[in-house]
Image (cartoon, rainbow, N blue to C red):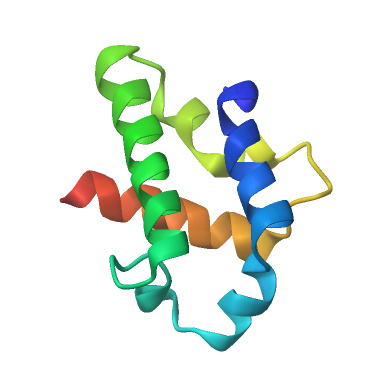
Length: 93
């Protein structure tokens, strides 16, 4: 699952300053459609999560970004938590 998440890692750390933005913005407003940059990221997270769970039947533990990013030192726990929260929100809709 890690190679599917490579785009997400690149997005967070090369295109935008996601870490600084998450410090300034409440979690609930980061992935709103009004926030164009991160709204696109939310769409990608939603699709990867949905396809992985429902079509590829990958176990939930392996779909979670917490599992995927565990071995990477590049991703902070704060960022991982925000991404996992988006995954959970997308599954609840």
